Image 1 (cartoon, rainbow, N blue to C red):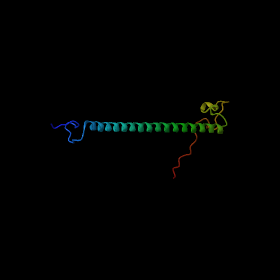
Image 2 (cartoon, helix red, strand yellow):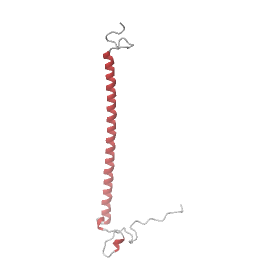
Image 3 (cartoon, rainbow, N blue to C red):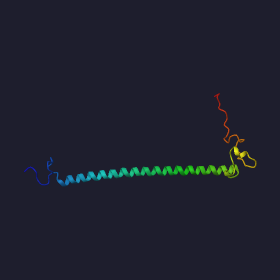
Image 4 (spheres, rainbow, N blue to C red):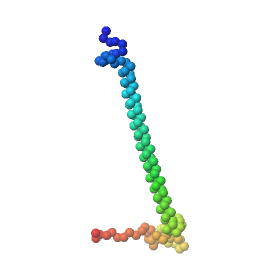
Length: 117
């Protein structure tokens, strides 16, 4: 007979057995599973780093805005909520913010564009 116990059916190498083939397949499966797990862990790590970076940026932006608000309160001499800005502030007795224009518009005046550059 051509096939003997310990050989794979149709196998060209006489020393290869069922157990060897099964072990090789198990090794390949384990390696593929470990590789997929590594890729998933790397993806999750990058995702977490991105979330932390966005959180740090948000906190820094909020701290900067808070600092600007506090600085604005110190320079204006009080809370900005006490000042009324707009054309309705021209009424008698209504406090006006010092930076407000003469009731026409409350934006800062920009210098005219320089056409002679």
